[in-house]
Length: 168
Image (cartoon, rainbow, N blue to C red; front, side, top):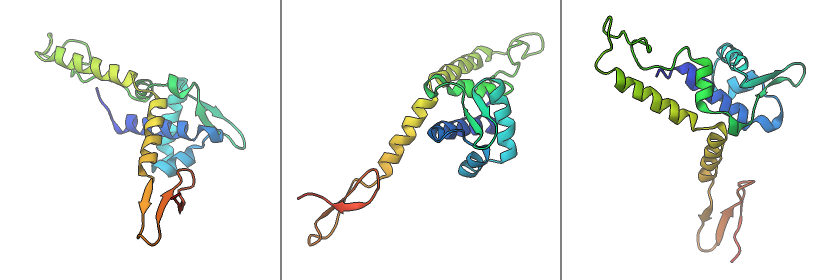
């Protein structure tokens, strides 16, 4: 299994697209800016993602890209397969000719690795990754801040992240 920058960037870009989907079609320029990925590189990736029917393009003013199907129906494996040339850790790429005319001694090991990685990536959806990002964002918010005894206790509201006096 080759996990290259291409696959990692594609997953990152698709996650960004999914997170920002409620704002309508998302431009590649905005994804490029937020994720610090070259716009021309994203154009190449999204061409492949569109051919694999993982994204739809919307033309015209306010255009951009949107998920072709729901985030819970889109797996990381689908994204990687769409942009990678191969997902194979075997030297022979499945031809069973690692050692000339025969398989190498570790062929089954690498095949098992391929199967397990693909199974894992097939079990992870964009919806799960969105939830992980939301949980991380919640964890980073201050929940309760205590000040000096004379000022009382302050709390942060999760929506505005403003500090307000806590009820005594």
